[in-house]
Length: 200
Image (cartoon, rainbow, N blue to C red; front, side):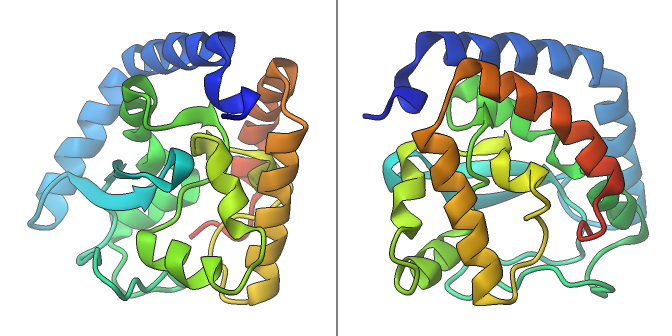
């Protein structure tokens, strides 16, 4: 197993920061939950099976931002001006607030604060068949943020080249991993969230 997947200090950082963040954001999480319930019928949380460490599946949590979701063999990525996204959901996605429930995934050990972003199983199967080094990204726990995200490689990946660039960044992160590098990525994530044009 790679060092990034078994380092005890990385895991300690995950638990400390995720636990503190959940406490800090608790009022916001409650407010968002109420707004989602008032806006459209359905659950507050969206659950989907995604590929994790060593390719093992896990259930990811997000605030529901769409009127309908997919969890089957065919997964349609959100597009710009996607009519499935609710008005509140659009704000949540633009600010990445919809991702905050994944702090629970970090506490459970399904995810890390920093690592390759997890994809739906259908996308793992699709891109794993056509991108040679795709499955090497499973050497690390998936992350809330990662090297690919601070390089601007987030959002939809309609072009094969875009996914290949993301995979290259994910594998570079794993191979060059340091705890200090994780801290740097975390610090750089906020301005990228605020300035990114491809979050929708």
